[in-house]
Amino acid sequence: MRRFAFLLAISSSSAISLAAQQLATSTTPLRECGACVASLAVGLHQTPPDTGRLRAIEYSDAYAVRLKIHRIASYAELPLFAAEYLLGEKLLRDQRNGVNQGGEDGGNRSSARGAHSAVAAGLGVLFTVNTVTGGWNLYESRKDPSGRTRKWIHTIAMLAADAGFLWTAAAAEGARESDAGARTHRTRAIASISLATASTVMMWLWKD
Image (cartoon, rainbow, N blue to C red; front, side):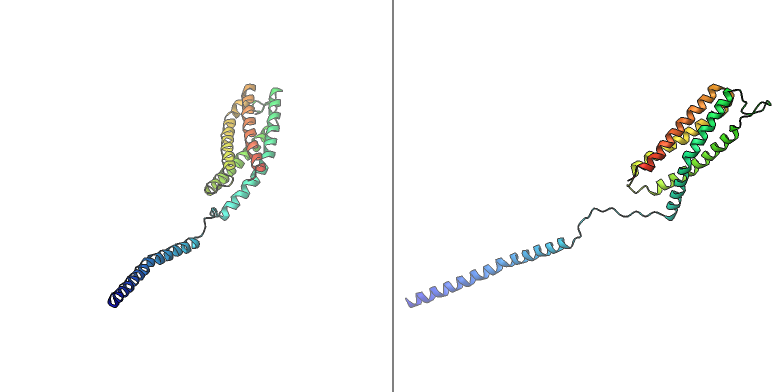
């Protein structure tokens, strides 16, 4: 009986020892898994959040110079338009009153013709300067989304006005020959002036 009790005690001790070893072995992966999760959490915490901010866009010093020239020219644009319109109206009245615009046949020469041509030449220079400076700056700012719609509307309108003024100049000779030619020249000029004026005023009023 004593021998049986002794064997039972040894057997129970061995079973308990084996169970303890198995429990220790089974908790090791859990500890390792917990360490992995903790490491992952640290890694996620160290990752900088995505702020969604756009990268800064740098412009050259030449961009600022061209922009200043473009703005100064735009301020001179409307007074030149007004002068050209008034001179053109005087030319048209003189022609209808029989005043020879050219004076080639010895008749009276309209006093407005020389001034009208000079202002037209000034507008040609102004639009050339603004087309170059505006187009160049539009290209340099191509990656900047700020004001993109406004800039493109202005660009398209002013290019259309450029074409309109060339079309107007093409009718200048006919304006000297007949009243119908003068009306055609006047209509084209007013349409081009109106488009350019609307586009310029839009840029002054429409701010981002």
